[in-house]
Length: 200
Image (cartoon, rainbow, N blue to C red; front, side, top):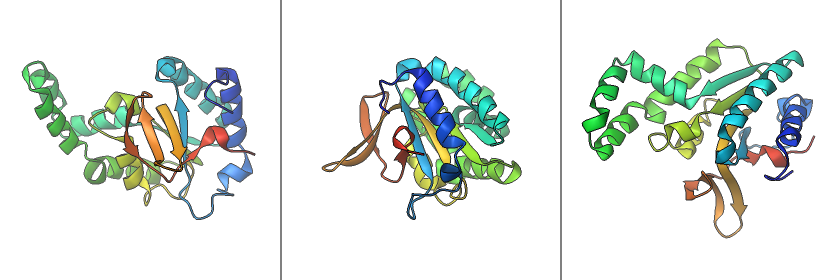
């Protein structure tokens, strides 16, 4: 199953994998955390949102419950709860981009704020699988490898699927990397499986 497979074929593959007992019971992972990357071409962003919604509906009809989390929505919630969303929107036009990035990176720090927010959702919602999206929307304030690194202890009980607009490559020489939008090659992350290669 490769990146060039049709949308329909990928959706079918995801449905088959995610509703399988092998996937749900985390078989065949050794002692690795049950993190899976679903890489897709960033140009397909809107169609992937639609596919994800349809997939969640189909999977729930099959009796499997998805906790659907968006890093973008969670970020807006954190900014709103802190009472600074309006302020950020107000100062954004005339604020230096570097300063704005520092402010948002600080408020949306994965370890301090974002992961506790995700942990809250995990503990308060019954689910079999976690979907994590919104990666492109929160770049560069939040980096996906930071989220995954910090999420390891929080989301180890149920499989987590990260919808990633880019590629996830494993190379013997360089290790594994998450290449956002297919061109930003700086997120090293080794401990996830490409769900398109997962066999059931």
